[in-house]
Length: 547
Image 1 (cartoon, rainbow, N blue to C red):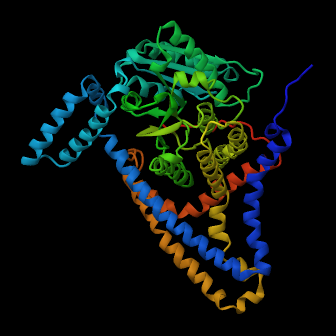
Image 2 (cartoon, rainbow, N blue to C red; image 1 turned 120 degrees about the vertical axis):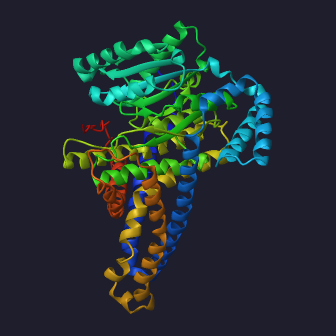
Image 3 (cartoon, rainbow, N blue to C red; image 1 turned 90 degrees about the horizontal axis):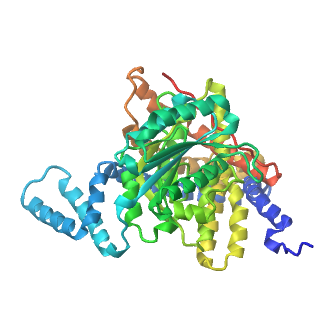
């Protein structure tokens, strides 16, 4: 006899209510101004003005975060992270040396920026000295990398492996696993085996791990693949007599290429972080591998996505795992690795860790890029379709809302206020994703179009001018984005003429279209499918290369 009791917040009716909620509220927010325009056009007009003002202020704030975030990214890439790892031997001695250098630099005329860099080093050393009892010896830290692939060609996978091979971290403390899908067939298996044979000897350990098809309880997706590889990694680490707390695991897609100093930077942060088991580490995803090759709309989307994460790092209290990220192996063992039942395992991993550790889990930003491919398929139409499906899959993160609500109710140890704030940020993010750009661009004319009597109101003639003026002021944020995009672009490939650079600026006229079609529509699509109980399956974004 089954005596198990299903708690009320785990019952199907409550789960369905929470799944319906995001889409229902988003559609209500879009429909309400239309209905209200017939009956209360003046109220709609004032709402439009207030909404435009709110987003204008927000655009200035986000531009500020973007500039600051890019500044940190720029500075972090100039730091000798391998050299900083030596500080752990005797931080007090290094601090004395830095203080002496700063004193000498003040009396001399140092090269530009040297004094600023020395002061940054001093501040970092002071933190090490203050936390000396909590430091971990970097010489004991192993970097494990799991590359997930489901069927990509060698042209895509090999550069990612080579980027690891060329990292400035000691190779005898790096472990490589290429997790590949059985459904990829013999060609994928042979590709993985060839790459392991060619590059594997340079690592402390390297292995190709085939993830079988059709395992019970698994949904097709990256989470199932890397979880299977994660269990194999644990076996390897055990056989090598390595403590799981000495292993930091980075997950990569097949097209992700780590910066040369990424692993040294990660080791520094991991070794110096207090309560490191309850932290994960998020580098900056930069969709720049093929940014010069993709169509203009895809360039705008790729750059915008890169900048969004850069801005989020300036608000670390909001930061979530995205794409490639790192977490200690002992923490992964406790969370049973990653979720095998969702297609958005990256963001979902934050919530699994958050509740597993009773609210004691945070994401630490790493101001260093993991370079990724922008969407590029064999034809323009296929590229558009692939881009839309990718963003729709990301927007499926709205499905986390029911998970967070139910676990917030079940977990009494996590702080109540923090749970409420975290849930609000999650909900507000997906709600804004689906509605904001549509409201900003489409609602302003509704009272005039749908209510003839409103045309006699004084506000009717002023509303278009007011909203236009507000949005013109908000466009300053777009100018800032364009300027940062220009200075952050990788060098122009020789196969393109200099005139190509002009189009890299002109492409931003497509921003309104990309934010509505590829952002809001994709998010609404995902939320509507969730509302109608039509689960979204995993879609592998098509990747192509240009020679």
